[in-house]
Length: 412
Image 1 (cartoon, one colour):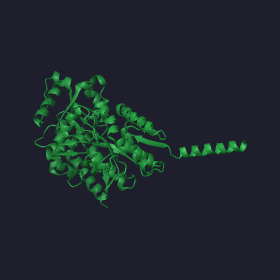
Image 2 (spheres, helix red, strand yellow; image 1 turned 90 degrees about the horizontal axis):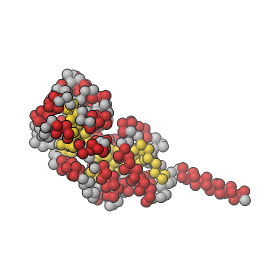
Image 3 (tube, one colour; image 1 turned 120 degrees about the vertical axis):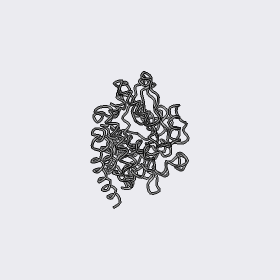
């Protein structure tokens, strides 16, 4: 009897060890800390577990900015998570280049990436001919505005620089901050650089700049930064912008204390339910060009090379890549699914899609198209100019020295 009990106990211990080793586990590290996407992801996980009862998924959620800081250490750890959320483009490719990611070419339900996703998405999801990134959703950046404020002041949607400045002046006269900016999260400033530089110099020029081929002291780039400085001098940006997170600045817009906010579609995740109908968007105004560019970040998932449960991870990503799972994620959030077989979720998303389709160039975002260190230096420079608009030349001279150093080091 004792021998039987011993054998039974040993068997339980062995099974426990197998479970602990990860044969039936999956750990997902996620930056979806805002309540709406967090809940939708939880629902997807529950459905995946229902379809795969032998796999237990644990989602560890970390606030967005802290996630960015911690991700490199997770990827290099011997105890790496099995799946992580992240961004397509340079930000993913830098990790793939270091050998920190698992290729996922074989996971896609249709048998190939292009059967599920637009061919244009393959380049930002790949490195050296292999796919490392499973795209889930994408969205547009635009000028979001408070409809009640515009109606009260009899403001019309501006389509060019002159009209835009006129709207800003009327908002100022009414004691309302023309533009909300949450520059405590410096990436918010990146949107201003993307849109203004593209609106002034064109999308192709801006792409050359993010590729390191244009100096920040170039007269055309100076014109962009001087425009930001001019708007700051005119008092168009909300006071003390650097002390507000992006969500805190969004609340200023929601309360009608600011008229506009250049932000991604995810701003609607943060809007209170009773105020969502009062927030709308329009295309970034023209600053002298007939064509226009848009920022369309592409979000999704990666599998760390050091993860212990790669087969379960690939099964999870294959599930998330399906049209059904992508629609379940994007429809309640009003985003555009990466899977091309998912219909547009609502009229707002249709307008966003039409805006993107009409653009001459769609870019991912400044801190996704440029090397991480370069983007960080650039976004800090933009925040500095908003706070100190009289110091543009010195800021750009210092920034270009960083450009030369950073891109030189990348070429070694």
